[in-house]
Length: 225
Length: 225
Image 1 (spheres, rainbow over the protein chains, first blue to last red):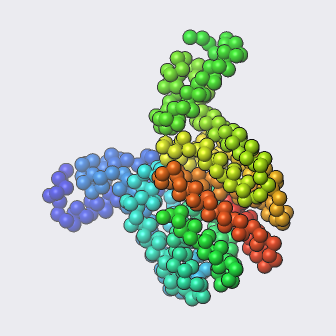
Image 2: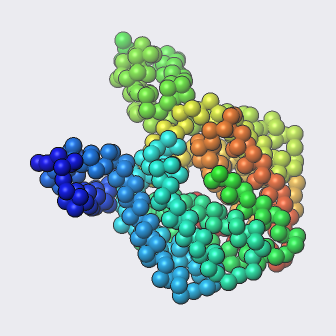
Image 3: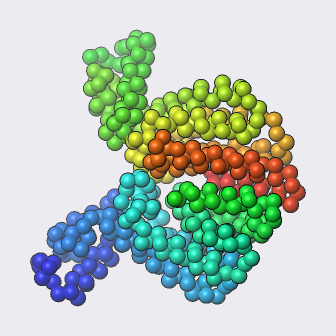
């Protein structure tokens, strides 16, 4: 057993990576409730103290999970985004690759939701601690909109990504509850939502509809303010 | 101390009402986590066995809380509904009286949300066990729509209450997170939503918009299917 501060940088990094990998596998296979710092330390063959040196709490490891999922999301989405300039197609890419990343976590998603949903939870997706992971998602939706060819009025272009991220969070909430095979109901809901958006977006250029649609978009943005 | 089965009906009913009242006060003042069957029994001066005879679990007492809130909701809404036949006004009445009932529970609402949000939770608002309380809310929204004068196409009249109930659940979710004084942000969001609905409902009679609006309403209904 070693004191973490004496570990050479590379060995320390290997220990950190090992602990992180064990934690992520455990969250996926056993779930949030059954995963503990003690068990992670035992599996890694290091002390609880060493584990806590790298990760001060279980919730800090959940943040690693969030980052891992969102970095995977970005890696899956970007090559596909490079191949399309259609706005709705691009949004479909970001939503679908996002759901794909979540898929292995579905069996224990209810537990994680319980732990994360409280407004005061450090692993709430809207908490300060979760901001780095959420910024990855926000960046992807901004990229999906800004890289598309469309004729949307500029106030819609500016407000859209924020609303799309909220829709992503609500879709993930629906997905937690979705017990259909392969979560096909979530896929179907997403497809319907995208078809509807395809119908609705051109209406932003109809003068009489522009104000109510802008109001809708602003209201959705306000929910996350 | 007495055996519950020997208690005359009226005394048993009084004990049940006492336990129920203590539990509801405790959920409001101490929150879900700190409320236990043991503590309720002690406060009532009866045994844990007697308490369990009346209420098999803490979650059964949460169901009593849900029913109490929704019965209060109905009592508050109905006299106001009797005084208006405007659809948007009537919907505002049902939403606002619903939020009023929740108000005393706001300080501990995050805890209750954590306990209730898991798909497998017996106190999930969409669980079989919670159906009686949810039916009260559904009945109120049906009454708000059916008692209003409007010229909505019939397929909208049929699908609207289901979507309105979902909006109510999402508004309650927003309210849990709302730390503004008196939850005024939730009130503001509701007012915006109602203004938008007032703009959108007449559009259901515009032929080119009828299909996308029906699709939107059906999609929202699908979320709760």
